[in-house]
Image 1 (cartoon, rainbow, N blue to C red):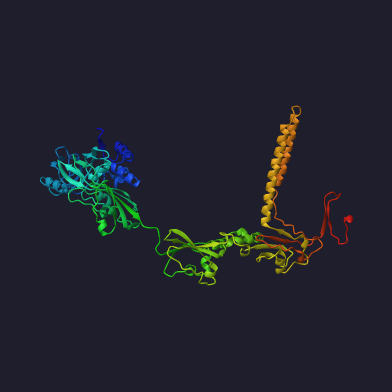
Image 2: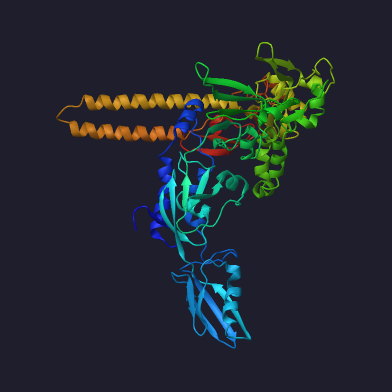
Length: 625
């Protein structure tokens, strides 16, 4: 077989190897028109229909095992399975020889070349009946002959192809890899004995599934793929941006509608108000001109010219009748705008400001078995859970973002959300315009004055009602305890503990600074010892330095484990046990108050012979302990 020969048989290794190389070869090629479009649009557009030929071509081979068409014409090399019974018996396979004949025992020679498959039984019956009567017969097509065709012109792989006799023009095109980047897809010719049998338009096959002009092949047929005709490119707001070939020939005119119909028509996301055509006008200087086009009936009927580049523009992302609600709201969405719409139409009630996160957090409470069953832990987490359960609204400030269409800048229009939604103040119920964005903020978005923030304080121990309470703006520790009903008779006011988160953070920061300072000092001291050691006692001084380094490391490790508790010294007198002696210290969010009971013991520690804890006796003196 010559290098130009190709086999159409399913089992051909040579054919499989050839077809696997086709996509790679095509990727390395780009037509002049593709380069022209790339320079104009910045995109490399594919040629419409070429991707069909980049798949493995074995899928499109003629099926030699399937039933033959009724109009299939027998020829030399075809095999028939013939069964005759009755007055004459025969069951065997016969092959049509080069003379177009078969030889059936006891029957003789029968000419079958040129006979259509639907007429085979009648021809055999007529011949056998000349010598026999009272018989029946059945004839089926067996192994098919092969035919040889030629694919020439602008094919991806031009050459000679051996195909099944059931092969059609389309099978030959797929076997050859189809037209190359410079080959026509709309004017493919099949020639037989010097005459054109049919002209095939691949666009009808690819876009519409029409095979009316896909005729059966005969041995010696020539498939001619001429150079590509006039081309246009369509890009922009459509899914199938590509390069398309126009119909060529006398009286052939391809409109924009014809090309768009190949990809589903005018895309819904393309504006019909305006499209652009870059057209080559020979009598202009320079010849490339840009024209506007409206995608209406007359615009879609516009005949396209060779070299046109059409750009479909996308619709504007702007909404014509919508306002946007975002931020700390139940449903941050776009809502329909109507004339006369105001803030309270968009936010009709408080429920519109409860976020879905609140309900999700609330539902999680019963999904955490450990929290539900361990009441002590639940009590410890109550204050943090209350703070994180709901994102509290900033009722004093919300804002409308509006596009200033004259100066093309964003305009901020603030309003009081509480007065607009809760109080019904019409001065804050501002009118809305289409395109407005209304933002509702939480107290975490902007730092509010202390008196407007929610402050939770935990109080435990010897008070009338221990618990977690919200403190009033400016409320002091003394006022707070009095509001709860005071302390019990067992309260030890002098020993009240006040822990504050802001103080704890500051104390921890100071402790971290101290640790870093000590690290620096100890490192400098060790380096000084090592730098000033003498030769005589170098080993001893190095051992001392290592020992000091180990001690310093242990001391620093112990300091790192320390954690500040945020304790505030109240500077109370040990002689008093009244609430009135408490300082006028305003409480903050996160404060923890612990009122201990009166201790019943005295501890003796330090430089004493017997460190111990003694029972407190009111008349006891220091020397008696």
